[in-house]
Image (cartoon, rainbow, N blue to C red; front, side):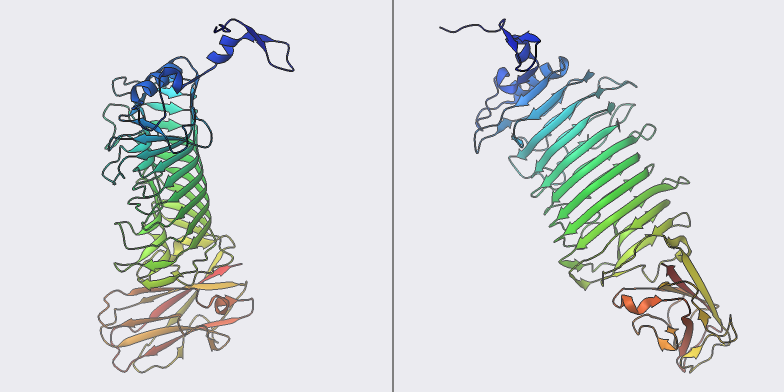
Amino acid sequence: MATNLIGAKVTVPGTSASRTFGEHLSSSVDVRDFGAKGDGTTDDTTAIQAAVTYACNNQKLLIFSAANTGQFYKISDQIVIPYDTHHWAIRGAGHRAVIKQMTDNKPFIHFDSLSHDTSGLTNGGFDIANFQVQWANAQGIANKHAAVIEFNDGGYADFVLENLENNNGCRCITHQYPGQTVSRPLNVWGCIFRHIYNAFSASGAAIYLRSNPTEGLPNILIHHVYSVQNAGAEELIHLAGATSVVIENVEQNFGSYTPGFVGWAGSGNISINGWRLEVFNWLNVGDDSGYFVCLGSGSQVTEYSIKNFEMRFNVVNLPSGPKYIARTSGARLVFDGYFDPGGTMTTGNLNLFQLSSTDDIVEVGLSRILNTLIRFFNPSDSFIENITFTGGSHMMRFYKGSITTSMTDVVNDAPSVIKSQSIVQSGWVWGLNVLLDAAVSAGTITFKVFKNGTLMDSNFNLAMTSGTTAKKYNEWLKNNNHTGFRVVAGDKIDVRITTTGTLAGPANAEMVLAIALI
């Protein structure tokens, strides 16, 4: 005979207070209490929706008990979080409870407030953790609703999304696409995204959030994002209107897409620390030219910090033009990283920075550069004066007048009588900028840097040929001979000019050598 123990008093060992057995049970609920089976066969959508609605409305912890080995919770529609519910939690038992979405272009959990336009808090103080979400069919990039978590309009604060795996869906965490449709677009703040796994043919971003431009995405911690993104067709992390965001411990493996991070207009104070690429084939896929795309908004200068970045490429194949590790536009960037690609460059050029405007400022803290594939700049780029180093920078200026044909390693004229300048503080040479008074209309003019009377590096020279109409040129260090570019106090530096017998156009030149101080 069954015994009803609901009213029986229960005392936790080591304590004196007691509660009824029913009170203990009511502190949390299980999806099985509402009829969910988790057997991989039963459609559990209705049961799970009932369980979620009850838990959210009654501030409960909802448990998804672990399914049997090889089984899962099968759903055929999105599970909706009720509007204006707070202080609840939804957790998968064990490492990750497995959810399988049978319908294309549908999320697992959807926050919905379209019919509740409000300036208040839509949902807050909640916790969602420990889920692996699969789709019956691999979701292409067009299926942007295929996400583990999808936010809609409204404000969401003081919550944690943790230990979530997107397995063959589009995005892991996203806002409703193609965008919000009421007068208060998404506002997410004061939250943590932790242990996010974009796995196995996920077609889109691990985190993709575009915010309300007024309220934004302030005070967010993104910690431990891991991606095995073979079918990746967009950036790994995409934020718009985000401020005071910290991103830590990101690893991307086996990807073939650029960029990895995009911070769009209105973002500010974005800090990235610890980002690693391993066995990452940077192919010529997509339209963007930078891996880290750091954008400002009009006259607003956005602050970015990228530290401890490591690359271990197998192949760099960029046939359609130069690519950049970090591209700025209306932004201030502090970049302090370590490079070790261990790979090969098959086609194209890979550059460290691209500055797009006079508003861009880059401060570099690189004591060692080990990447033989990367140049600091594309030779056609400008704004050398906007790059400084944590140890400081020094610009050495040289001049040469009366340029003629058939010159061979002729030393510069000014600024000193002896024509060379002394290094006053140890550092290393990283860039040469030349400004001519006229374009080269025929022949060739070449500039080489000498240290203590010896050519610094035969690969580090700047040659301008006929047919080039511009008058300003740059050559940026490609660190295939890093030791050779070291200079110490007392070293003598000069620039020497060689011309062909057919040279025509320029008669005077100004040369600027950039020295990073250490």
